Image 1 (spheres, helix red, strand yellow):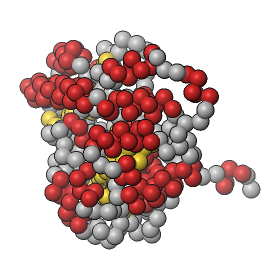
Image 2 (tube, rainbow, N blue to C red; image 1 turned 90 degrees about the vertical axis):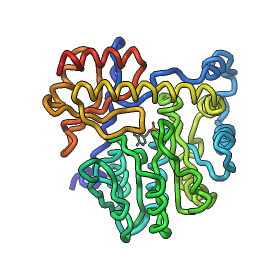
Image 3 (tube, rainbow, N blue to C red; image 1 turned 180 degrees about the vertical axis):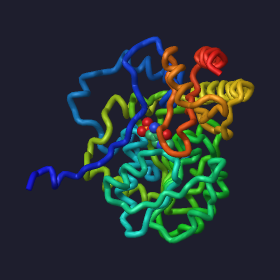
Image 4 (cartoon, rainbow, N blue to C red; image 1 turned 180 degrees about the horizontal axis):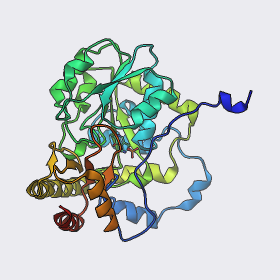
Length: 349
Ligand code: PMP
């Protein structure tokens, strides 16, 4: 027998391409085109590096307290991790420990089935409707947990908060995770519902609306009992979960409310304009409440448009998956970048 027979074999998540070359317009992984809050750059310049010889604070309290303060919740209802991927992975491991399947949509963030497989969690993927909406009743049956990305990715479609609440009402005895990676671009957050539902975990990130994908900061809100269970699992892996500069810079970034509002409103404004221009070019897409638009063209294949854009140095995202292989997911960049994109699309179509 070979040792390889005992290896746990997984099909890993395929992240969006992060090209090394400069001078491209990168609209493929939903990053924010604007820099982090100015206070972050200033703090880096004067950072006292001598402290890095010590381990970081395992409770991450600087960052936890800053997030709690910004959202006006108590610190024992906040959990932080290395990007929301880390937070979500730990949440899957902590809360989905039943023989019944965890439910999530078919067409959603493609890491969910990777974690479920890795941790041997039974799961069932429920197809989205033709227009990419979710039917809430699909999530009312017996299950081992529910995960909803809201707004959903890569479709951009929002499930109304009242539907999320109905799903919570029908699932009192399992944990419901609402992944709000894109919530700051116009969606309605489930955060206020954590007071009412002790089985709700709301997950957010610094990677999109806070321009800090490279720092890897994610966080979650939930009842203090839920957060305690999550922390116990997380610290069983690595008690020093985040590093000292990230904790401090994250706390600074989240304290800057004006900059956050200004840049996310710029992204929303650009998105609305680009929607109109894409429509004029004949593109079809569901309404997006995110910093990307998921669009297809009735006369031109997605593969062809993708390749043509790429040859011009514009990178968008395409998924080789059933039902959505004609679609392109276009992240919202600066106005200038989007002008270049639209000019290119006019030539291609
Ligand atoms: N959830 C969703 C729905 C996402 O699209 C992403 C970004 N790829 C994430 C979570 C993870 O983001 P991060 O780890 O950068 O916080």
